[in-house]
Image (cartoon, rainbow, N blue to C red; front, side, top):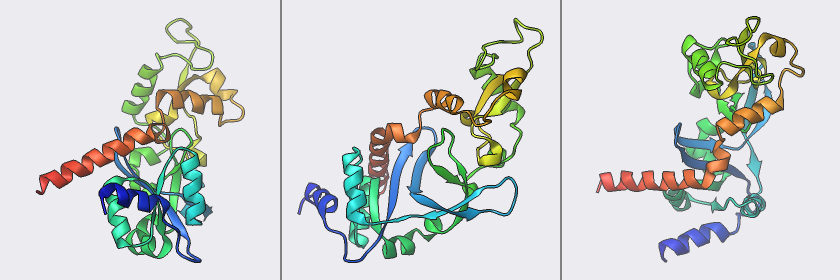
Length: 242
């Protein structure tokens, strides 16, 4: 059986009877590098403040989820055993991995963990994977200056700048509020004047989230390119050991 035949087999083979699957993906983001993720579901809140979600791996019927992904333009492999899993390691992208196999190999990705929202509002990141500066409320001076410089030192709502209006005081605002699981990083921070900041209602304004989305496209919108990067990386790793 050829390599292409194996890929076709994994894209069309049936799920095991009465089995459930985890939806996993492996890509390489140009900024963040290797990204391994699992689709998760809410299962509670952490006790500490701010109030952050606890999420765990979500189970699916394999064929139904694979078909949905295919219709959405994101082909997925269905992984039933260790050999299938090796092909997923080589190919990257999306995979529906048999529950028992995933819990054996990737328990730390599936078990309940405290999470924050990814900047842009799509997806979540484990708090354990984030830096201290991403978790703290106040941005560092370096991050604050990066945001102000990116935004031309002017309010992104009214457009006013201290360079032209002496009464303008600029703030750096969390588009996804820190108190609701937003990260403290440039991709989630935007420049507002005090007047617009104080009058922001609701505090999480999706127009601001979308504005940042345009500046920093989420991994979902570069998915196919990120799969190609993953496959190129795997190829380079294999060449390095041969």
